[in-house]
Length: 126
Image (cartoon, one colour):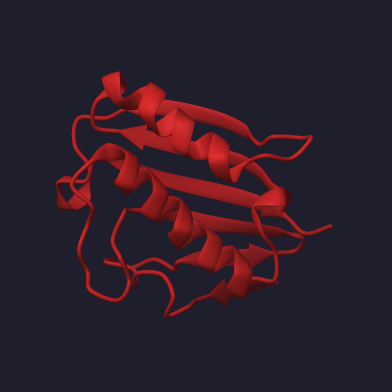
């Protein structure tokens, strides 16, 4: 059985998808752009964008009844791989547990709304 996860504390989906889906003991969070849910704006710099994307993920995880400590996998999409170190520094401030999530990071040709970063996550509730 699957369950749609939605919160007003993260930006609404900009296409035919859910913010997140719970499937059994897993929560799959769609890629989060760095859009502030209250005003629809994005920070100008990559650090601010990474932090906003992670705040959006955190809000969705909270709605699902979990948090960063239950994230087992993330994927980071970057418009420019030269931003990897800056994003990594922001990311390290959110994921601080004994067991850190597995992760992949990719440079992509472009991201929606010309964002510099997009992050998706999978959490385990079991």
